[in-house]
Structure formats: structure tokens, C-alpha cells
Length: 196
Image: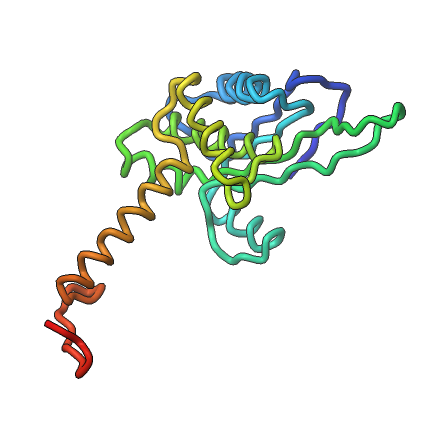
């Protein structure tokens, strides 16, 4: 992704590239949203946001994470650099790439606008740029995402719905096991050790 270097503090700038048009969302309105979200988190530096195709996100995912699949959002936090006074700082908060294709599917499935879904994904990415990591922080990112989502008047946050979907999937598996069904809805044969 391209970078923009300059003297910035507390999210003064955001560079947004809309390679894929999004109904109800302009570059300027998304830049304002990025700045507002960044300020709410105390993020310093520039956050670059690319809204693009699934193919482009897949290429980035393959190149930087060695995962050959598209995903809804990727975040690339900038490494912190030492300032002349010895304090750690970076003029670039990092880069965020969003698949408009996957965002469109999510929005349709969840019943909200594509513009809102893009904002949910941007918020998730900004949290990562601010140092949050939902895989390792015992729910700190999920709690902060919930607070910010409510403050910014956004629909269900990414971590919330992912957790809900995982719980729903586990519940379906438990019900299938109890009923003797497999994932394809067929009855499985009872093994000699199974009890009816």
C-alpha cells in the first residue's frame, strides 16, 4: 500500500483510496470517519485505507501473511520509530485494506448498508493499528470495539458477530451430535460403543 509521510499528530490525516465504489460513501466521508475513530482511540499518525476487490486483498494476504485467501479486512500496523528525543513515535499509524466484495456480502447477510459495513471494518482495522489484538488480549479489543461502535452509531461489530457465529456453529454441532446427524444432515450409524 502507499504511504503518506508528514508531520502529524493524533490522526490529523487519513489517506483513503476507493478502488471500488461504495454506495453512500465518499472518500471525504470515509476520511472523516477514519480521523474520528483514530482520535477516539488516541491513535497518532496517518492511517491509510484501501477499499478494493477481494482479488487485491487476497494478493495482499498471500504476500504479507502467507494465506492464499481473501478476507474482509487486513491491518498493517507501522513499526514504531525512535524520535530524536528518544520517545517512540511513528508518523504512519499503518495501512488497512478492505474487500468491498466481502463487505457487500456481510452487509446483505446482516441487513445493513455497505457503507456501514465498510465503517465497521475500518474501525476493526484502526483498533489493530492502535495495538489491539483480539487473538491475545482476553477480550480487551472486543470491549473497546463495542464502546466505539456504540459511540459511532454502527451496527454489530466484527468481533461481536464472529463470536456469535462461532457460538451458533457450536450449538448446531452439539444439536447434530445429540440427534445423530452429520454435517450433511444424514443419520450416522451407531457404532458398537454408541448408545441410542
